[in-house]
Image 1 (tube, rainbow, N blue to C red):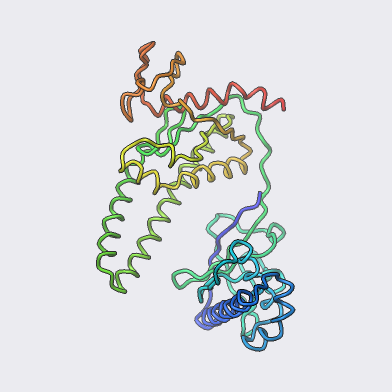
Image 2: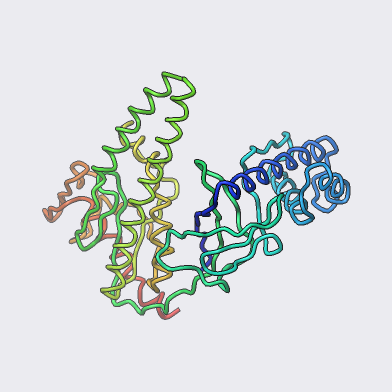
Length: 357
């Protein structure tokens, strides 16, 4: 499986300035190339490189391969939209390949700048260090909040797939971000509190409108995003570990179009729009693949209004967000738990067929 690992570069003051100068010159060159490409309506990489290669090298002091990477970045951007002129931020990413970036060890790299190559340390968020032979292709150098990071693509081996005995169903929601068919609920109360607190702070900063307020607003947005990501990581890790330990597959409802399907209050729609459901699902899927746990998609229709005991379906079965009471058999339980069991059942029915195929 190919994963992108965000690694922090540890640089001294001189190295930091050298990288920053290189990044600014690189993106300045990209803007120069972009103006040429847009005016001439020439968007092919080979044609642009033929016309501008020597001029870019002389004008911006870029190395041969950096010039090629700058042309490639511009040409790639125009594959999406050719109707408007593309502008690149001074601190936009630089794409480094094996010719201008090499790994001296698991925690040290050699990277090219306008001042020549520098050797910088690398810190990983993951507990284990990268193996050099698992690094695939190019890496993006990004600059965020005064720090340089490398977005490294690595090829991690999948674990030996388990042959599941059963299925663990997962219901995703707002009050409970995730509920398993075992009855384990991951409450969204704390997440709602954090979101509402940040929303108030953002509203206040936006109304102020000063430079300092805008800078603070950017920091607040980053904190909220990191909080969401960390929460989703923790939930997905525990779910996958539970499935692995009990030799079960995972069943997830297909939430494509959830924002269009919901018929709840404005406040609930705001929560749906602001929580990273797709991210949580993706985290569960990739962690499960690395752990050898199969993941099955399930049609979510009527999972919240069908009785997990007798199978009777009626919208009135769900009294409110939390309560489920079957009008046919009288079965009563938490609505999210009931939905999770239905999700698990739908996947379990097809489990023998999937395993045989």
